[in-house]
Image (tube, rainbow, N blue to C red; front, side, top):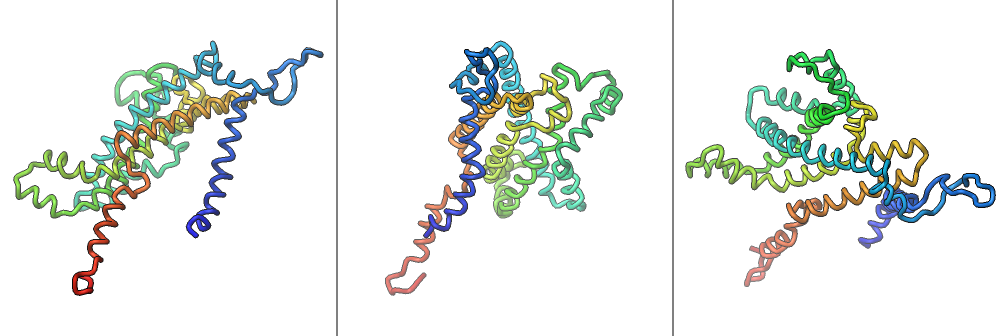
Length: 310
């Protein structure tokens, strides 16, 4: 009965996830309009099976290979640096929102506003901020061409991404903080623990399960980054990610290479997710302590010697 009840969901996932994935994997082994008819010498229409040639060209090709590795390292940079800073700021935001301030609602709303703004709107706003005559240059008192090739373009993407998505981690961390019993902090105060010791030995360990899952979701989202750098920087190579590279190849009707880029990104995301779950123990499904809970429940419901429940 359980499998029958799950069958509609499994069929839906197979249609919207499984089929496109298999189709993309097959398309990555093809090339469009690349074959030459030996009889006429004309380019053959349709797809030609080339095996792993698209992957070899992506990793080692003179043109495509250079673009792939540039996009790969940009994606890794935006993910590692961005998510690390977002985690620190998100935890700080959660601690601020958890305090019993007079204007608690106003503080929480103001912190969550950047996350609620659509990414395209946020990118356009930061494009105006990073203009040559924009607010950013006026604040630092130095002329920086943020939206041109160079390190400043990467910094612009990181700043805009951190500003927008740090509240996401803060929101999930706040939910974890609100599940901590206040008696734990009262006991720590009685034992003479200061704020720093309370944070490292009580708050952080207790909120760790929620925080790890939040960071994992944000990590996977950052690896698929497309709209923010695309709107903010356009097609600059300094801000190009793997998703942008695949989209650019597809716009040139090179669907085989675009599928190869997408499959490499898919494998990269799966690898990072697997290592993250294994090394940090992210409880994504939420059933890690289910056996322990089941044993505790069974002990509570076990009949006593008189035959009645305790």
